[in-house]
Length: 478
Ligand SMILES: O=C(O)CCC(=O)C(=O)O
Picture (cartoon, rainbow, N blue to C red):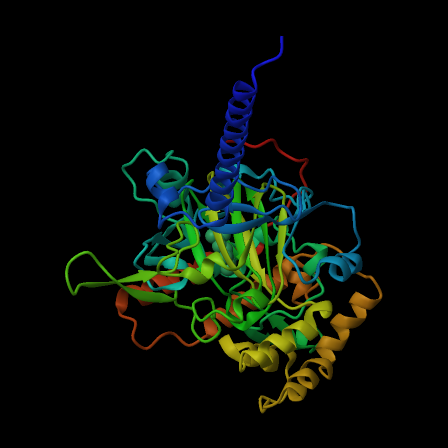
């Protein structure tokens, strides 16, 4: 028996309504998902949910995959395995992007030295430590500098497991290997990707016993970064606008980076004149009250800094033995998931000369990039135009020597003494010691500061007779 017409019609209507409702429900669901993904979460949502600003340990994810986290567009940093590419191929293919080379530094004696090994080797050296403050305007948000012996720092602040008694202090650079612990020269090598380089020169040393040839000493780099889990550097741009590299020897560090081109149209991200953090004033709760916010990328405040939501943030995690390269003028921030130690440097490589000249000129010679070029390449400081800057670099005999080495593919891991043109460790160490002794001291120092300075110098100079024994790799001690 057929279904009466009226019922057929009304049954048909019900079906249509059910289908329409389902389509509506599905469309709403899709819209909500899209809306949540596309729209930045309310300010500090991630921080509120997690109760802190601990970033996830990233670095996973396929290249080019865009994720929305903390309201940011996050793309994984390109990763390549060590030994998979020559130095020239590296720069041809990746010179304009941030790259992690996994396992590049596993052959360095510093990898596997362990905390005890580091303490034994350099425990008597003096490091500078800082604490992070979300309100600090200083470089990377790090303030309250305190000096201490490395052994004390490692015991109290790094290995103590953050039991709550000691504040979260970060040995956040500021001191280079030559003035911290010269024997590290044998342990922490300069990776082949960045060992044919123009380095910022601190001192030119000329000693007849060394053949009368000028040697370029750089005492403030590579800088050493050591910290317990939870320490971090907030977003900053390095001075001189030259590329950056870091090797991690222990622990796990996550980078968030923003390429130079992305920063050009943003006032908040234009760090080219001043390295202090950008800040903005916002209305706070009380009537007529205002507060100042510093830019943070680990806990982004998108109401205060909406530009952060518009740029691509490249993110990736390094573990012991990994190397990272950042092109000129890349903004970066670093978070230590585990206690870690690493070394970093800024220098300029033949394949990055053109990009550096463009960036330095476009930023109106920002962050001392012109001074870096004229002092390091040893050219006339009267640079006014882009062409002047280019010829300052390209006509320099030192730069030509570096370029030749690069063109001929003579690229390998080097020690610091080799980078400075010395045949062996001891004369390099003594030259550093001698030039440091001769450097004028700050006239504002009082008695205690002068005493401390003298002690540091004595320690550095006393390490020049260090004899390195080639040892098999030791397992991690702690
Ligand atoms: O490892 C860190 O915390 C920061 C290193 C860094 O950004 C730098 O040396 O410029």
